[in-house]
Image (cartoon, rainbow, N blue to C red; front, top):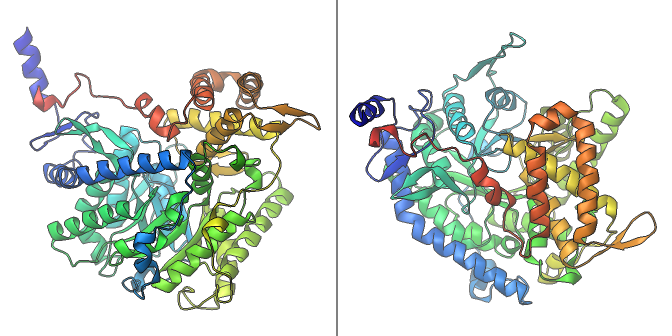
Length: 565
């Protein structure tokens, strides 16, 4: 009987894996052309070469956080002053991506969304394996299939409900891909018995299958192009540079073919912008203001400091001194080094049933983007195709036919940005309504993420994991330090008891908004428990999605690739 079961298992369809690699995700014939022996061997080679450096970088992150907790603020590193003051420049920006005035972002899955983003009229589509994607096995592998077909120009989709066919226009956005951050594992693939490093899976599979087709097509001889998230120090950029060089050598393509934009979305990274560009100087095409994650990082960095409490998150915009200083320093740094300085996300989505409200939202977007253009940004992000015409009008009107502002000096005459400018505490009120909004949005986002969706429309905004992270860490910060909150003119203290009452009331409100059936069938109750636990934890967890990741990992029955049984 046992022999029969073993024989049946061995005959079952499976992925052809090289030595030391175990694929524990579900077998799907559509995924097999992605998870080839050669591709998995390439990913395994990257992990074996760079895992030591990644572990070291993650430990140095933890060491830095211990210093911040003890009272040492982030600062410019005296040891790399020569880099900040040196007269070096990054490699020239490839003509194919010189114009990045408006970029649309979205997950690499679902397929229809990828087609719509490429056809949106944006200059660039950033296909996301990170904050806008819930990293289920199906999402990750379908995303790789989608991007392979997009690079080949063959991606299509038929909507069964409407009967509508989707295919690429003649003119499409340039494709950039954002892999996960260094801290995230890929538990469905084991390499030498350990979970793969998530970003090396995302990068490695995509690069292995697409570099040749990409360079022959929309890259015009260069590419692929990437966005790199969540870095905190230039040593992490150095690891990425090594990965790029190893990939180029393996593929037999010219050094510097791969190009990447780094998201400056952590407070420590803003003190390392020159150093990050220097490490990636042969592969860089700029920096981006990842402003929502940057706010999250501000709280996390100063988690032990009651004098750094944020006001309601709706008040932490680019008008705050520390945010404005961050933007100005990024622009100055990028243009001095000859690369793009990209602006932040416009998260609004069209309000279809209220024309006046929709126009008011569009006007806010126009004002924000005009501020970015006048400040010197070369382009910006949009979360929805409906925003692109308005944003293009603003940027193209300001640029007057130029593709970017790299040769300009919009920051000339401004005072130098100091370390104190970058950490100045934000001003504004803290309210019980802010606590409530954080709970309501955080729970709904997490419920959707657990159910497989990482890009979630909530209250006329397209939210990703950054919103849930800000909501979580702000509630944690207020509770940890007993912040005084305004409750309609009455001052109350943020306590676990207050949060428990707010959570009970907001869970009832969510149920009323989504309906009892959807609430019951969704993962709202589970999300509420996780969010409450995170907000009241004695120590702040680094990432909500890392804590919840095991809840979406589904191993193949038997716990290993069928071929290996």
